[in-house]
Length: 208
Image 1 (cartoon, rainbow, N blue to C red):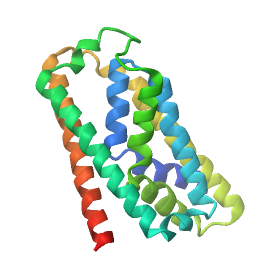
Image 2 (image 1 turned 90 degrees about the horizontal axis):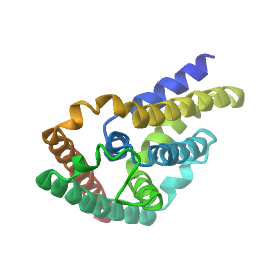
Image 3 (image 1 turned 135 degrees about the horizontal axis):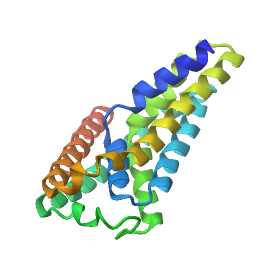
Image 4 (image 1 turned 180 degrees about the vertical axis):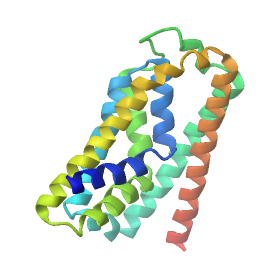
């Protein structure tokens, strides 16, 4: 039980941190667009990466500097483009238009899932959190303890993503105001670009 709680707390503390992925889940939850698929995609990615880290395969991620460099560059470009879209939405005030159209969407579930995968898997920080940090902590445990730690970590991930996606609707009254959407889109754009610039700096150090 001690390891289960430890896994829950470690995973939860890393996942809750504000990032591009969480900002996207929050926005989809507010718009009530493909919430289940977005939350499930984030959870499945976390599940697989945490399993890889806890079961001792995390060292494979860091053995290819060229792959890490490519991932950082692609991730930075992806976040720059998506951040630009968020800034455009903030300027045009277009996001809030769909708020009352429960369940409707201007983009398909498949496209939304692909964006979610991009925001998740093209960010090297997700591997640092799930594979390196969580996996590193679990590496000190016995096999049975690792399983408990793994269950706790996975439970925290599922609780967070589905809670964020479906719990976002509690904030809908606040987001009836177009100005609130502009602020959210602007904040999302800032988050995307800050992460993109950090990835670009990381890639430059690898290349140099």
